[in-house]
Each structure stands twice: as C-alpha cells, then as structure tokens.
Image: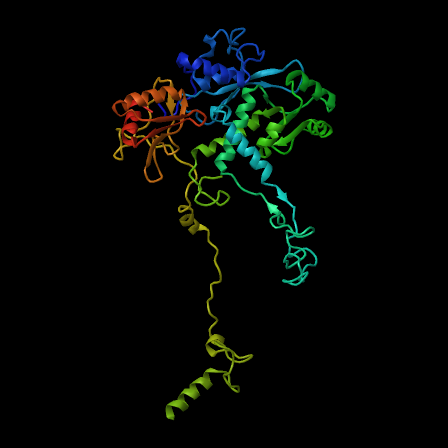
Length: 318
Length: 172
C-alpha cells in the first residue's frame, strides 16, 4: 500500500449539532439554487464537510445521477491525500447545442475544494489592485512655492505678527506642510504561497457557486459572435465569461469571435488571476488548463522554502 | 669586474646582436625576440573546453521539492518519526501533517509569559477536536480558542509533548 492511496469514497458522519451551521454555510454558498440532483457543488460540499449528502432529503429534489456510463475524461495526476476525495465537474462542449455534456472530470480537492478563505481572497484582490498603483499627486512645500524668501516685515515694532516668509504653511497661498510628496509607489509583494492560495480559493468559490464550466476544447463551429452569445446564455447563464486555455495559440474561430465581443474574454492559463476571475461571472476552463493548473498550483504544497529565488536553477525544478 | 663582464657577454649573446635590452617588461625591445623563443617553438596547448567536470557542480545544486519519506522496517524510526495511519481514523475531524510530514503541534510564547500550544491544519469538525482535547487534558481544564476560518486550535499552556503523543496514538 502506498503512503497516499488513490481517491476513494469515504462516508463519515458529523454530529447533529453542526447541522444548523452547515445549513447556513450551504445557504451562503448557494446550495439552495434550483439545481437538479447532486450538482458538482453539493458533491464537493460532501467531501469538504465529510457527510454523505445523499442521506439528507431536504437538500435534494431528485436522486443523484448514476455514474455508470458516464466517461471520466480527466483524473487527478497528483495523488489525492487520504480522507479527501476529488470533486467532480461536468465536461461540456462548445461545438453544438446538442452534445453539451461529454463526461465528468475529477478535480483535485486541494485546488477546487479548499476552505473558503475570504480574508485571503480580499488580501490577494487588493494586492493585485494596488501593486501597480503609482500616485502622481504632489503638493509644493514652502521651499518649492515660488517666491517668499524675504522676511515680509521686521520682527519687532511693526504691530503685526512675526513672520519669516509669505509662503509658510499658515499663510494663504503658502506651501502645504504635510501633503502628498511626489510620485508614490504602492508596490508590495505578497508571499508566493498566499498568492497561490488566493487562486485556489477563487477556483473553489467559482466551482461551489456553479460558475465554473470545464470544456474539452475551445473549438467553435462558426465564427459568428451570435452563436457564442446564444450558447453562453443557454448554458452558462452569466453576463460575462472568461475563457482560459493553456497555449497562446487558440483556434481561429474563438479568437475572432472574442475580439468582437466585450463581455466574453479569452486568455492563457499563465495569465489567470484572482481579479479577472472575480470580475467575470463565469469561468470556462479547458481540460488542458485544469491539468496545467493542477501541476503548477499543487507543486507549492510539496516545496521547500526557497533558499534562493526559484528563477535560478534547482536540481528538480522546473 | 670579470664576473660582470661575463654576465654582460652572456646577456649580449642571448639577445640578437646590435641593440640594447631595454624593452617592455618580460619582453625585449621592439622587433627583438629572446633567443630561446626563436630556437624552439613552445608547445602552447591553447584553451580546451570541457563540460565533463560540470557534474561536480550539478550534484551541489539543492532540490526544490520535498520527497516522500522512505519506507522503514519498523516504526517509530530512531528519530521517533511515525507515518500517519492508513486508512485515516474515523473521527469527525482530521489533522493534516505539515509539508515536512510532521505532526502539526507548535508552541508559542508572547510577552515573555503567554504560553500557547497551537494545532493548525485541522479539517472538518474542529469543535469535536476541542471537546476531545479538553477531555484529554481534563484535570487541568485548559482554556482553548477555536478559529474555524483557518482551522486552528490554540490551547493556553505548553502541552505539545502530550498532544503530539496523543495525536500519533490516534493515527494522525
């Protein structure tokens, strides 16, 4: 037996006292939407909470779909640590309206079913917004304001308050004592592991709220933008879609369609970031993208702290 | 005087005749060559590039990824390490090992006198773990703090040795 076994179904039972807390969590994560049967979100919830949701009648309207006859198109390359099981998502197709569901894809729980750390999500989103910020505001101090070098009147016996310059901060038209000083950079870097955790939390949130769609490839039958808009309205039901593929060379049809449309965007997997994923309502990943992300993000679970930057050579990386 | 004249004669004979030896450092003056060089062309080997010795550099470069611990004949190992039980225990909570495959029980000391034991990496029902820890440390009734968002349990006081042994016994 190996140290980490292949994914297995382990049904564990929770205490009754946590049922109420779970219901609140499910309500927050949108488990009460009219989804028929065991959607991927509820399947994933069952692995996260460890409870077999098929036993709870008040959540489901119909029974779970039978797994026999449904091909598994993607399984986790890296081993899934023991008590967790992979979460699953339907693999869809953009080719036509009829052949929508092609099969199931196994998604690694350490990427698509992590605890929903909204504080980390906030941290990473704010970091992404602010790290490029340079504020160009600058206010002149008393030395930079034109003029005001001479003492306006003599120190004593003039009957007026004593002053040294007509551009001191207490004067009208004077310099600003504590204003913004020159271009200020708000650049900072979060630890790499926090950035990676932000990506994982966003992917989890997208899956749990039924906003993630896995697609076999981004090939379209036509280069008509209305086709993709119809398909998106029909299948995804969101206003904006982010399509992600691994290579930079994508099929010509989708590139030409997306360049005409404003709310549907296309990008490579290396450019996946928390802000884009949250800005677009729906996220569409290809199977190759899922494999690429698994390889890249899960590596951080099993790496030493860098003794020198990772861009310099290590014996087993890249 | 005789010796000096002999030395001068030797130097003069070594040089090509006619000119004084007041050239650059290591070389005689313009156009001249040391007689030894004109007589025997030296076998200068040139520069040889070899990449065979690079293996001595390569074996010094450290790895970036943490390896799985090897299989031992018996546990605990001489350094008192034990792998987690396979399959994991059927409890409402699960405590994941650290990336170095150790039991995650850590001590903290702040303000010089605030002693805490922290158990991170707790998954699923952390309240059941809190109840079990309080039962385990019963006569002392420690103060515990649960953080559900991050999955950590803090206990007032140093109990790391007992808790580590207790978690290993449970099979985490």
